[in-house]
Structures are given as C-alpha cells and as structure tokens.
Length: 116
Length: 112
Image (cartoon, rainbow over all chains, first blue to last red; front, side):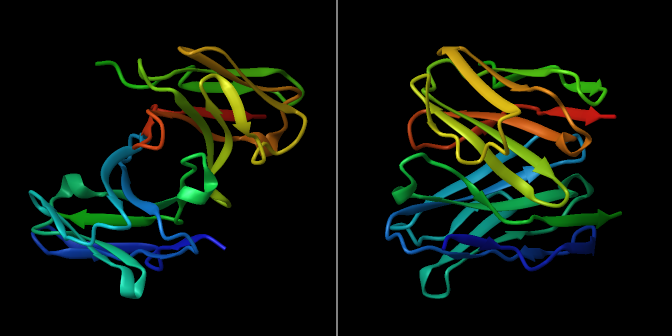
C-alpha cells in the first residue's frame, strides 16, 4: 500500500545550522510524483518542489536542496544555513499514477524549529 | 495571479448546525481537491473533482458531508449536521490535470 513516512516528528536547530528532513515512501507504481510542502505558523500550505519518479537528479534552490534516491525510496530535504523564517511544519507527499486522480498522500510532517 | 481562495477563513458553529465552506480554484485549473487536516489523522483527501465532476469521494467521512462543483470556478463543502469531531482545518487545492496542487489558505472550523 502507498505510504509516506517522516520519522522525525520535531527537529530543533540553531540558526545557521544545516538540517535534513527525511522522507521515505512506499509505492508499487513505477510512475509517481514526490512533493514537499511547507506549512508556516500562519497555516497555509506552500508548494516547494515536485519530482517525478524518472528524474533522480538532485535539485538545489537557494538554501534548499533535495536528494531523491529510488534505491532507498527516499526523498530527503536539506536546508543549508537555516534561518528563523524556516521554522514551519514540512510535509512530504506522494502522488501515484494508478490513482488516476493526482491524490496526494501526505506524511505526518516534521516540525522544524530554528532558534536564533 | 490570484491563488486558491477559500471562505470563510474561520468558522465557529454549534453542534447540529449546517456549515458551508467555499472554494474558488485557480483560473484554468480543471482539478479540485478538498482535504482535511487534524492532529490525529494529518492531511487526508476528502473528495476530488475533475472538470467539475466528482471522481473520487471515498474520503468523505459519512453522509453528513457533501460537496458540489456547479462550475469551474466554484466549489462547496457542506456539513449537515455538524459535530464536534468535524473540527479541523479544511483545505481546498487545485491543479491542471496531474500537475502540482496549489492550496488555499484553509478554513479553520470549530464545532462546539
């Protein structure tokens, strides 16, 4: 069955530290998409990245980077030189082609607290 | 461009009352999703529309919940009668086909 696991419930770091948020997924599909969303204290869900199952290239966007490894079914997210504004709940999500709906299956989220 | 618009942002009601949540998707998007977020269950899909047609409502908790999409720019999620366990944040999201879903700001529902 499809599943997304974010084993880290809460992470606390001091500003300027690097931090990696882990995401492990399960799917029987060969075609799927993986996502990361950010939910700041204000509550909205902000899209960060979308990666398809055929593209294992790592992605870098400013201080954010993502490491996709099909061999370990992981899609980890690293924030370099963290800032207080990075404090939020981060969700990893999976969308399978077999669903025919684009339905997102979310992990339970990782709460990141960046202290000044 | 305007993002997904939801109203109201906050709703407080008493048990037994009818609640209607509203959503305006991003213009041009043909897929619309309603999700619910609770501490216990996290984020879960309630219903999915494609081209205004409900395709998958398997996540709708029970008959007290109903959703409509009368046109491409408007959808409603109705709870009648509401119960305290319905208290949650309800998100609407839209996408163009199987592309990235963009979420609205959510409606925080409290049922007393």
